[in-house]
Image 1 (tube, rainbow, N blue to C red):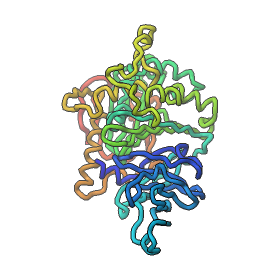
Image 2 (image 1 turned 90 degrees about the vertical axis):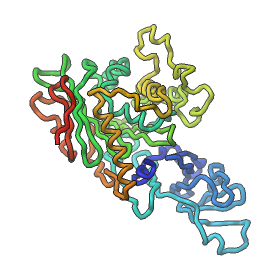
Image 3 (image 1 turned 180 degrees about the horizontal axis):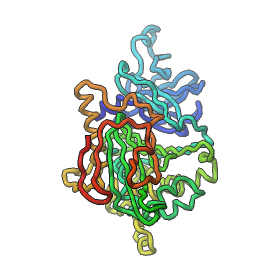
Image 4 (image 1 turned 30 degrees about the vertical axis):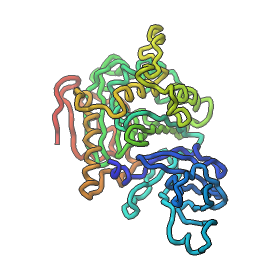
Length: 426
């Protein structure tokens, strides 16, 4: 799976983590690989192996000097592309031309820093997501760290039925936040057991959660939430203004990126920016309190079984359903509580878990493709056409009209709304 991930461009951090040329080098681990991100004096980003190729001292404590980053140990200096600029403890002027530091392609777009960590000859074009076109004032970026395998975090993003239960408190409040698309989720609190229909697509899969109940406006209408999963780890949320991505740090940790954007609403400016982040538990205070930032991630008091993942039982007594701060902390608790890598052999999947099952199969297929020297699905996907949607459609009409830009390769569906067992439809 690591080889499969390395065939795609993936985000590794936010622009805000390394905002200016005088910013300290930013160390991080992605796909089990230790990296350092830095800027030269011209603002150009570099992504290098974190350790100097000389004696393996960390470049995270290096000096950013003009056109390069200098290792403190012996002064070797490297350009963003890995070119060796100086080796002051070696007299031979040609020595530095014999090798390069390991460097990786890097792009900056949509408030994120992206890198390609795979074979150079197989590097695809850099993708273009719709929210790349939103300026900083109309885009809101945030991320959270989790002590669990990335698949456990992804599963929650393709599981519509937990919204009404785990996030019951947050959904009620969502409709009150300045009429943003949070209210699109708040409208479906009436039905905790949606019918799930799934289609394989050329980019991965999408699925629809179909609900019919008291809040649907007309007789014979169905409320539809369509989520799109694009390999290897991208989610187009049904709220239509939210992109999410879960990138492995290593086998047992992951980073969950969020991007909200809107052409008209200034989501990147306060007070709206702060209000949105606070509502979902992605504000700095909430993230730090639950050890979901780089600074707090490995503290001794981080969420664990011994402290019930920092659940506040008194809040339950006071009327809270979960006893957790908000959406982000609720998801984190249920995702990490089975263990860093849960035992899926003991899962009992239900019809509402069809999308979770497709997630497993999509990831396995990508890994198998690379293992067989084939190109994994979605490497060249047109991300501008991959969307999440919510809406209401007549019961006798196909919900797929909401996502006409998606190319379907195979359908899987349940029979009558709310009844029956899954059946495959080719």
